[in-house]
Image (tube, rainbow, N blue to C red; front, side, top):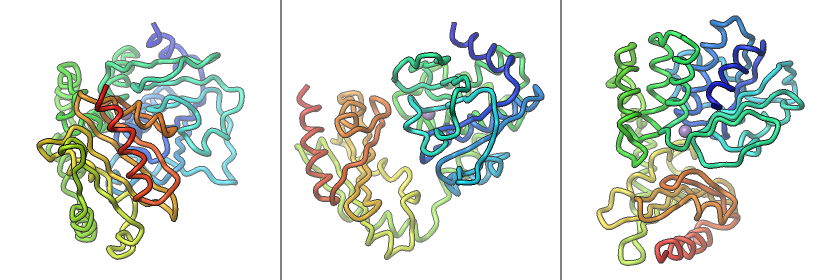
Length: 320
Ligand SMILES: [Mn+2]
């Protein structure tokens, strides 16, 4: 039902703002760019904005330079806003200032609310938004060319942790297979995303691994990254992407926690779990969110304070 509503809205409007969440990931960026390409084929005007500059590891995505960061000078006119990969406008940062009374189309695979006076395409069975955009392309009879195939493949591959996370389904593998047939190159994508560590990033990982700690009989693992470590290794918070997989790799661990000091007294937390614990609920207790097995939040306070608070909440979750 809502898939039809979305394709109708895409066909009937002439100009679009396509936005996604702060700290965009492979799914967010891949979908933004793939949908933009389809809309441009249909002779629509498309604006792409992001709160944050896309991480450098995604520089290889075709068209990535078309995604602009919102500034005070940003002044655009459009008929409809497509909000991808996030449940609400408070996750898109300043791009929300650009949206006034235009139609809003939400395309997402996270659990979230049904927004009034908007089109809501929310499909939490899909591994990624890329899987949903793939469907929309077929519905609109849009050819999946090599560029679109690559962009959507990046979305599915990164959101499923390269087909390892619990959201990997036969449907996501089938779509990924079709994308390879359409010209995406699995090896190239994996190489560009997974084997792109700089020496300084490896050194940061070394420092972080040194303080990996286990709690609750080994069921919880935490890894802390301080401002000082960033400074010592000349790295940025974006250099910790995927670090949380290391504590998650310890055999006994059910919940892995990466805590990064992003400013003095401000700690950013990434949570990963196996099926035993819903980390979306844990993150929500601190105003964050995400999925059952992957979520995040920010806690005001030092690394140690944030660790203490999150451990209490996780232990509660493990008891359930
Ligand atoms: Mn996603």
